[in-house]
Amino acid sequence: MAEKSIDNLREQCLELLLNIVPISQIGFIFVTAVVFQRLAEGSGSSAFGALSGLGLKNLFAISDGLFWSVGIVLVGACFFLALINTYILKLALRKSFESSRISEQLLRWISVAAKSMEGLDKDDRGPIRDSISTELTRRLKKYHSKRMLSESLFSISAVIVYASIYLIFINHSNLSKIEFSYLELIVGSVSTLLCFFCHRNSIRYALSRVVPLQVCLTAMTGELAFSIDAD
Image 1 (cartoon, rainbow, N blue to C red):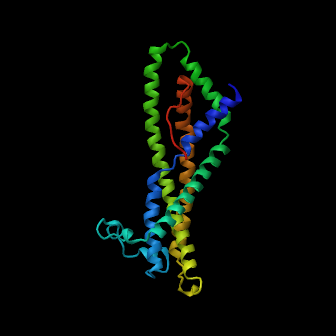
Image 2: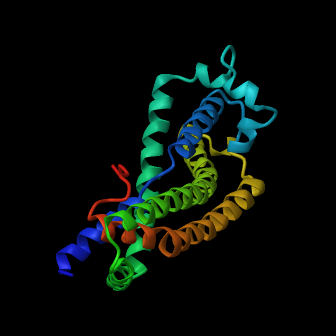
Image 3: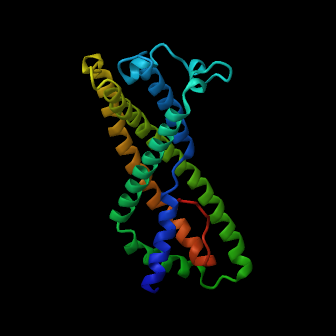
């Protein structure tokens, strides 16, 4: 197979891994906006302090949830931070994918798929293709659940970091108001570590269980097995 074809297939596989789970960043925007608002009002001297005593109903209730009182500027700032998170997550995914040296395995997978299809007519290939497509969909759902866990853990650390920066910004003239939180340090460190391990686990799963099926379908049909917008 030509080198250009391998590169194209490699990019198709990368599209799969660059799918960021939207709900993880939606939750980040909601929580961070409330934290920023509470810190600006002086209702806490740390991210956890701003959320202390609050439940989901207090935060997001349709009638009187705190999120709905957050200013549009803060919501916009949190949306921008979510875009930064998405960029960081996609960059991590791309680096992990490229470091896996997946290109070396693509030719082997294509060869195996082509040999397995030898001697099969169109009627025989149809059920096989449908079966692989169904299994691919199932594995994609499992992959997305793994990504959801990794990205949610990342969001926890991100909220703590951004809240700390914002707290320093609004209290730069009187830093004594800022309270160092060992709990936040521990939670942030643990969530970052768990995020790293979950990220690696999701990449390994995608490379060993998902991408080979995509390659197989591509070899059978010459088309993408699925389409994911990575923009």
